[in-house]
Length: 199
Image 1 (cartoon, rainbow, N blue to C red):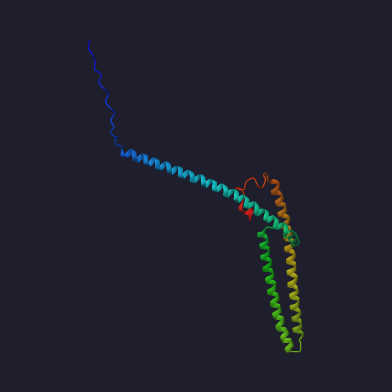
Image 2: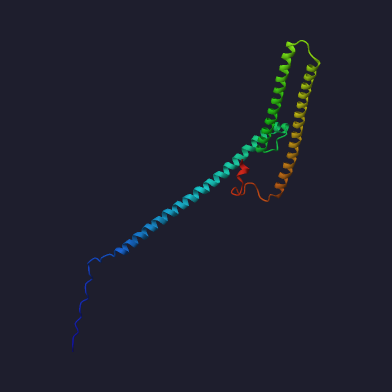
């Protein structure tokens, strides 16, 4: 009877395997890319949270500004109604004020010119006690011219007042049409609102 000898298994090698430099570089690049991705994701999340907070704060500020404007307009309602400009916007009021200042400046210049002419005639009349009929007629003509200028200024003021009232009626009609056509509340979405609305 033959006996078979069993050979022992080779012992595992305890010599450390040499690492591949290319593999190590790839792993390092992957770790750097993963870290960069985490940082980028964190920054994107923080940016979105900041933008959401800004959006909410903008909506709160817009509502507060609108409330302040409504309160200011309500406090000046009586004065604006007496002036006939309650339903005009701030830009329209500014344009009206500029036009009124121009008209007043032209009226003051005409008045100053007439006063200068009258002063010259008054000095001449004081120096020469003999008032000729021509001088008196010219003085009368100047007074008539001043009266005509004043009446013309008054007519233009009345016409502007009528024009303002007509514009108010048109604006009220337009506002009523817009309100009737509106299908959502004012506070549903602030993102779609125009910046002009908060001015």
